Length: 97
Image (cartoon, rainbow, N blue to C red; front, side, top):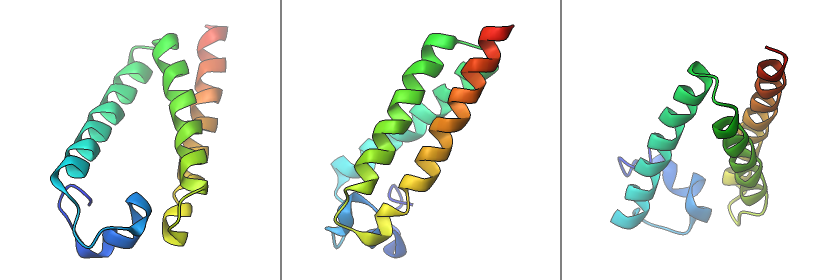
């Protein structure tokens, strides 16, 4: 929703510091969508190294969201942590194969 500059997303992203999302931030969120697509590819092709990268990226995301100035954005740490845990479980399963 940041990419679309939706009003209800303003307090929930980027620390809640913007009245309107700048273009550079919106482009950064487009890169984020591309990374999520790459994450799906990594899972589908069982690319362990890529999954390890996304595991660490999800952990970093959870940490950054936890220290956000926006109380609403701190809630984003929960899905990021769930994502990291899920990727960890997938990596463990792929190693067994």
